[in-house]
Image (tube, rainbow, N blue to C red; front, top):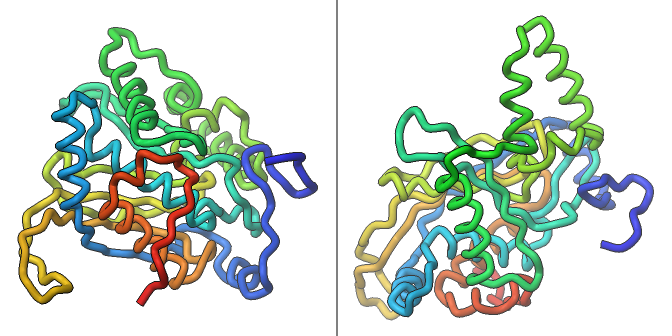
Length: 292
């Protein structure tokens, strides 16, 4: 990232904006009323075969690991997806971080933990898969889950009565808006990631649209539904049965325009179609051509 400049935050650098972007932020200063929705069916046929072949080789790679890897590569190729708006300024995250919520155990009463996966430029599907597996196994295989960061702070704050907790949360929201939230509340906080993802297909559910929040520094949230076999008309005019998955994506429209979002969706589909790209570095440049 280099040396910090005036206006930068500890977790992000300030981005200069065209006048139209600044006025758009002034007109709609809150993220929660600036989100747009993309409902997209993605073809996962090639990706499914790739993951199945890797499992046959003894590699512990899952479809979710592949999703996270593809999303990380897309963000490196489409850097505006790593932007966020705070206190009427635009920033770019210092790191690419994908977050999700994992249940400690598979039952209704089980607690949930926020998990953040930092994707470094040199990462690939195998290193990212290991990062995810190590973190998830760490909480599910431990008899005594050691909460830290935001996971621990949430439990602590929730114990206060309303008369104390409400103004305290108000002060924390002010600190969040100005980029001075205590480190203990930023660590392992999914609202401070580049994107929040949820694999609803794992519980045989369809994709949903989940609102983004004013708190934190996350501009994108994506859910993946259950993968199903569907008949698809191919470019050659023939019909084929393909592995199709519905994605529900919420984005802050102030960070980029519709053309940029459309090309970003095309990029992730291109990676799904060519999954061997995930074996290269996360920051590897991908050329997909123009949106048509």
